[in-house]
Image (cartoon, rainbow, N blue to C red; front, side, top):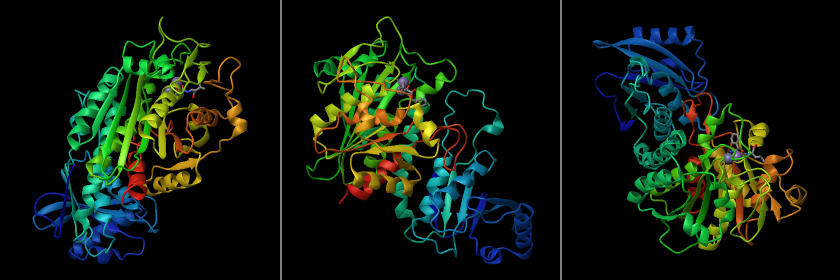
Length: 492
Ligand code: BES
Ligand code: MN
Ligand code: ZN
């Protein structure tokens, strides 16, 4: 989506959106129109029960000179502190217009005196909601093809455009994550995931380092490699480094679970719905997209993104329930359930990251447990942390961006549930508190003094229905969250 900013409404054909607050006089907002147009707009608002709720739309056509123009009144709601308020307004307009036949949307903010960021945020929402993946649809009916190509923000004030650059970078990151998550597992697998990251990130100045099977073997990553045994696709550990701080301060490290397909392995999953496990790399996808957003806006921070990339398949060579593997940390793990593979991948990534970068802060993101969806549904990701400050900083970044987080407890009683009679720990405990015991498993790989958070994003990566800022499908969850967290706490 092309985004531009202007002082005046342009000429030519476009749909015109006029935002309306709860307490605005409609006549004031329509000051530029003649009486007939104002009557039509007022009637449309009434007839369509438009009550200026956030993102609500009333639509009509008015005569403007020689042309009939589509006019949309869009609600700004009553509260100024609604989460992602302006983004939602942009998203609602795109949802309405994307395949409407209109090619250009003009949002006229003149006379509203909104905060300086409003225009850029509306544009961001409009562009984010427009993202689609039609690559494999060779027979898309004409009426389902997107027509909307451009958003023009009018009257957003002199500073409006300046806020766009950062959001444009964020949008690029989110689009990249959505693409990685949407692509099926025969297209995006460990090697091709790495190549896509190279293509997107190296031009931005991100340094890429890749460990192959042999390198990981020499490092003793028996937990990660055990998961990969059943797959024909060789595993990869991908490290993406952005040195934007201009000094040698310790980087903040993000780690993503990148299981490019999770069949469950020998503890195989039921066929019903298994196709969803193409997005079991959503944590890695979020980390890759966040790196793109962060490098794209040249953030003054040192950030490393690490993706543990494997495919979990059943095979004659696959690992078995009961097998004992040795992780890079030296700790041994009894593999009770080969479907609890994410933690096996992450634990070796965590050890490698801590040895390599000595981070003070380490955050992992993973579609780790189905139990997470049972606890929090599709509204919040689960947050687990060994540090209250880090937990509240991440929670705040989530609240600000709409990538919401809710903290859950950890502790010794849960941790004990992961003890094994034959090894240092097992990879799967009881059914109860499954997300918490998974976090406790990971906690055993956090080294002294490292502030660590684990985000279980199992419910957030994919949406079964359209949301405010995305259609059905890949959401791009986590990119805005990490970008915002870095901006607020690791820059300057
Ligand atoms: N990738 C799954 C978790 C998942 C399930 C994410 C459904 C999104 C939707 C993970 O690897 C897994 O299979 N976890 C098991 C753990 C269990 C065997 C301890 C689970 O949640 O059932
Ligand atoms: Mn699994
Ligand atoms: Zn998995």
